[in-house]
Length: 458
Ligand code: TYD
Ligand code: MG
Image 1 (cartoon, helix red, strand yellow):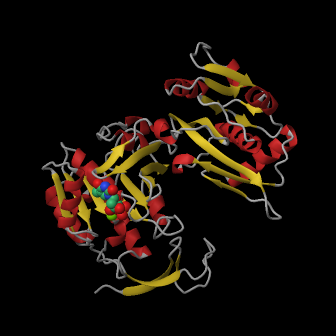
Image 2: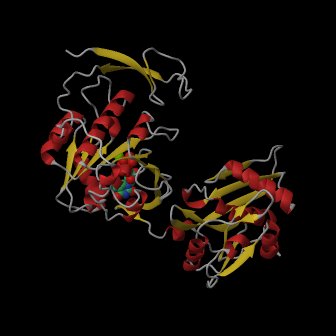
Image 3: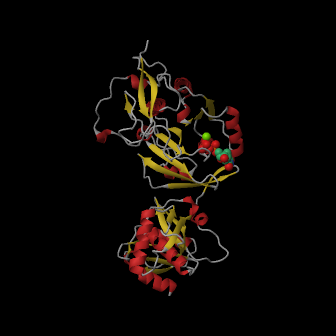
């Protein structure tokens, strides 16, 4: 007979304590401890994933240079956006967590990928929907192949029982919060359950070399529901985000053991599934009939991909004592810094103005090269002067009002050229480092904000 015992878990970070506490000592959250019954491990975990390799005697040390890194190549999916975000395809034996708000399209994305992988046996385990519901979704997406299997199950032991004979090439779990392991007493979705189920799946992934995708729910404040420990355990954490009311969805890696975390995948949610957006700059720049002030286009780089995005500002006289500064998709502190630089170095009286800033398309930009476009759009709105169409900007603004060089300037210039821009303002220091200055686009090197405004708004 197994001994049962209970422990208190912080629902926010997963901290474990033998007694209840008001405040969590690690994440400092209040009232987050919940008692969960956990069963003491029995010596024999029947029903747990166990492959033949795990029964061998303990692993021996091996010299690093003897290990072949690419024993199994990555699996390339037909979905280029996913391949890029994963760092070049699915790594065998990896555990990938996809988080996102309810209704954003996580199940749709993974079902669609399952249906696109025609040569592989894919097992899609759902604890949330019935087989008929999944079939309806598949019909909606309009793809079919005979090697995609569906199983509605929540017990990990039953899942492993099926897997042992079924031997899938890819396993998809929708969602980790609905799974339940019989080694833990507490309910599905509790910290100890989520942790145990993820650990069992990780063991399966590593020992069998099968990639496992986990769908994870997200709480209201944007963190993955359940413990942070889940993020530490898996190899890759992908966030699927976007405004539910808009059609664009962004897939971004927030942790990746096999690639960079700066890559983005952009999708459009259509009536028949998600479509990859291969040329995002076109959708991020709005098509306007008339020219309005306060709009500037910045050339940024997300990961390895150049993106031209629209920045919008609205500067108006503040009717209250303290002027409001608010930004969407851009760091508020950086906005305040740019306003101070414009005030001090450019002589613009922005202290008594409300400033609202928006990056279109729901993107969040951290690339400092967007600074120049921000400053141009703020001044354009303040002066109510339109920035000519087909003009774009790439440069970081320093505290002295100087315009600093940014990396990968050639890629930015080529992207702007491809999209039909005629004029591009860059730092004069970037300009010097260009290997060739033969571009169709007219490049204007500027050293200080003053030079920019003299040239732009004369
Ligand atoms: P879903 O994948 O169920 O979201 P999640 O698993 O993240 O909770 O996506 C649900 C939304 O997507 C729903 O509002 C309907 C919409 N949708 C489409 O617009 N087109 C489609 O082809 C499909 C399958 C869903
Ligand atoms: Mg779902």
